[in-house]
Amino acid sequence: MNSIYFAYGSNMNFEQMQTRCPGSVFLMPATLKHWRYFINSNGYAGIKKEDNSETLGCLWQLNETHWQALDHYEGVREGCYRRSQLKVITEENKTGETVTAYLSNDESYGVPSKHYQSGVLQGAYQVGLPVHYISKLESWATGYSLESEK
Image (tube, rainbow, N blue to C red; front, side, top):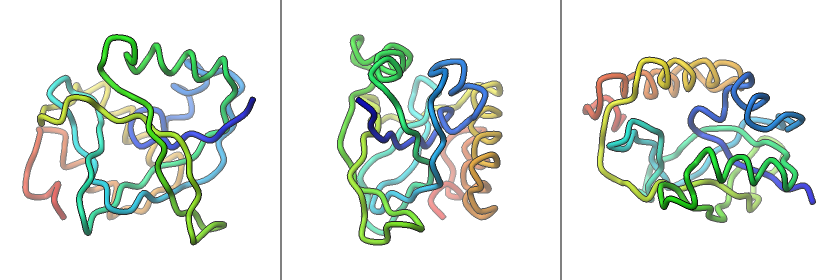
C-alpha cells in the first residue's frame, strides 16, 4: 500500500530519504497551516499546533516498508515521535489533503547539531521552499530565538 507522508525536517533531504527509504518518491512542496516548526530538546525537528503559523515541507509517496523504516528512524517504539493525520495544502490541492506526519512527543526547545541542521537546510533547498522560510529554519541553528517566531 502506498500512502503520502509530510516531511518538514531532515526527511526533506533527498539523499537522506533515499538512504532511509530507497525507492520513496518525492511528490511536491506542501504547507501545513496552524502548526509551527521548532527544534526539540533532543536537537530534532518537531511541529506544534499554533494559530496563525505554518510549517512548510514536502510530500513523499511511501510504501509499507518505508513506513517501517521511518518508524524506526523516528523512534516511534521508544516514544520519541508518533504518527498523526494532518491536512496539508499544495499547489495542486488548495482545499487540503490528509496525509501522515510525525509529531515529536518532546515539545521542549533545544539546539540542533550542525550535521542535522545542515541536512534540514539542504533538504529545504532541494524541495524548493521559499527563501524567507529557509531563513526561519536557519534561525534555529543556535536554538530558540525571536527570529524563529517570524
